[in-house]
Amino acid sequence: MSRKVVRTSKFRHVFGQAAKADQCYDDIRISQMTWDSNFCSVNPKFVAMIVDASGGGAFMVLPLNKTGRIDMSYPTVCGHTAPVLDIEFCPHNDNIIASSSEDCSVMIWEIPDGGLTTSLTEPVVKLEGHSKRVGILSWHPTAHNVLMSAGCDNVLILWNVARGEAMVRMDTLHTDLIYSACWNRDGSRILTSCKDKTLRVLDPRKGTVIYEKEKPHEGSRPVRAVFVSDGKILSTGFSRMSERQVALWDPKNFGEPLNLQELDTSSGVLLPFFDPDTGIVYLCGKGDSSIRYFEVTDEAPYVHYLSMYSSKESQKGMGYMPKRGLEVNKCEIARFYKLHERKCEPIVMTVPRKSDLFQEDLYPDTIGPEPSVEADEWFEGKEAKPILISLKDGFVATTKAKEFKVHKSLLKTTTASAGSQQDNTGVKDLKAALEELTKSINKKNKRRAEVTDDEQEETVTAVTQRATSVWGGRG
Image 1 (cartoon, rainbow, N blue to C red):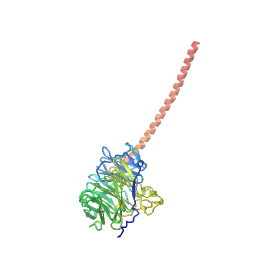
Image 2: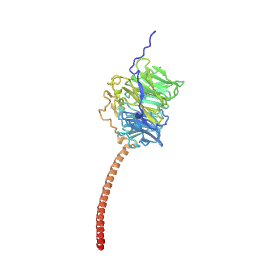
Image 3: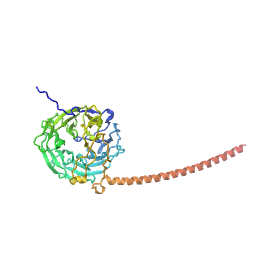
Image 4: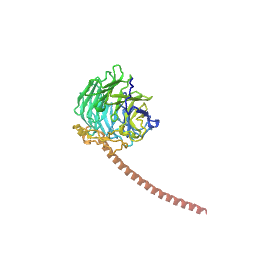
């Protein structure tokens, strides 16, 4: 008899743990929209969540340390005129966030350090080019100020955000609703899944299809797909019998999947999150109460099931923290922000290690916040690998965060950039008027005080004289 040998992996014992109650964000009315996006975006400074709003769309941005109960009157970002469908923080500037909405627009917002003190209604830039609601956003991983948006008009647009211009418009490639769209690691390819049951690998600047695969999953429910290591593709979908599946593909040989596994019969769409540093893919189902995770390797069967984090509450959305926001001294390899009906709960994925020293095998150099190419250069054809950083001493910004600059003269749409200039001059005028008013009031008060003092002296003198005459008459 041959004994079955368990596959060796340092991630075999990864376990998930929910944060304590005082580390959660409570009393937040998470959006009730049925759209299949993450509804949450997070970076080392802020966590953002799409919330319910009357008469338009809104999302809330909280500093990471503002845990506990959130007041009902806490300010929101509420410039959209219809519900917000997707939000994503810029990977190169932690204060910049993009949002898309049912009002067919994409807006770029700048969040001040320390969070919002008043509600934001005017975006830094407003991008208009879609004719139906916009449900997918994704920033370019290496090029500064390049944003991809996909709408229900089956159009995919690449924007130069600083100029407020649509640089590439792909409106003939997809014949039906786009379910998902994402970049590869260096941003040289785009992967989309579509309601026409086709996976497509696109050249972003030419707007052409390089590879495509029809019916990666037999079922009719939504398919999600992400790039994993070595250019391979991992997709989640449904079988003909509505069983949830996960599959791994080599786009150069799209005929048969490298691996296809059936998971369960739940109806929620599986959202995949891939960590290129560890090779782990996390599958979070909307409406599920669990997170499954697998290790993707070069050896057959390629996709190895590791474990599952389970809880009682179902998830309405999920945020995924970039590697530079993790606590490396606690061997934390991933952190999720799980959205409940009225709460956001951090979930930490940890590799159990006895040593407190930096574990180099768990933390290879990872993508940092510095962009490796500017938007104009990238659209002209320049490729650039991501700039990597070491997490050995915890992430410390060695350079100033990439400033978000808008070329005001080049903006076609009526953006808030012009409005902000007017606001600044208006504020200066208001301050000057206030100072003048204060001076005049002070002068008047001073005169009144002097007059009052004189009147008091005259009154005292008159009273004294009267008293003297009265007492004198009596005597």
